[in-house]
Image (tube, helix red, strand yellow):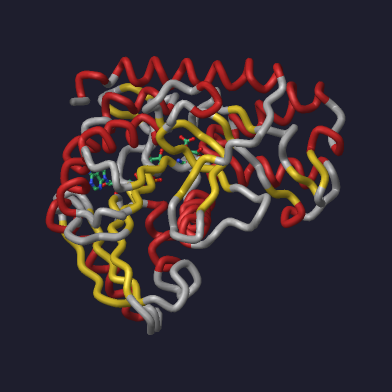
Length: 332
Ligand code: NAD
Ligand code: LMR
């Protein structure tokens, strides 16, 4: 085995983690590398992780390295290469007597988690560590964490891959294509009902969506709201938020970051804005991304946005600005 990678997963006793963690050590996500796992939970449930570790041992994963669990995030974060920050409260549950309807309702509940975790990542994670925030509201949690980390050589991302996978599935059905024929599915903005899934720049069997779909009525009235509201639709149907699809999307994001992006392709995640596409600097915004040969992740800058796209994207940028305003007391 060539080398090893250390991965920290928070929320390790939760729903998403139960699907996610085995895939980290299955020999596909990190290829031939040995994967050391550091699993983190809150003190009330951390002992449940003993059962998960037993199951991992019983599963015979040849690539699995050392596995430990703890409620001490700082200790877990030492020399980690990857942080998958899943730990947080989902919407759809009753919290303090109030049903949590929108991801933004989670700002005040979950935001605080990311201050301490960010500090520990900045101080103890590897300098080239990658951090994927899954816990909602993912973009603004990542903003808080990155600010607290105060370490610009680390790369903070928030997950929009699930939205991108959902959008690919809807486009494939609409155009009678296989999902594998759909690429470059960009999610602009926030992982929230304001996100803008881009059906004009998507590539369907080598052709741009703008020429294949040719039905702006369907894009505006069906496609966009279906993708924006898919998380809620799953909660309504399942009584719990998406878990196995969220885990698959997290794995897809890690794989996209670990491998050079094919020429012309891109993947979806939210990353710190450098002002590209007129997004205010510093916001964690959904963009088309590419991974370079040296592992650096960059925003793909050559996408052209129609006036329709710009007006939709702006709604999501404005929401990210208002979320940043709402958490400014948590930032340096
Ligand atoms: P879950 O309730 O099943 O699990 C969350 C776990 O996090 C719990 O076990 C909890 O004890 C743990 N946790 C809470 N605070 C923690 C902390 N400070 N440190 C470590 N662990 C902590 O929820 P889930 O279904 O696994 O979802 C987790 C989060 O992911 C939710 O916020 C959900 O909204 C979000 N989510 C995001 C996406 C996305 O696309 N970005 C998709 C699905 C779900
Ligand atoms: C999703 O998109 O499924 C998650 O963000 C969970 C949610 O609250 O919708």
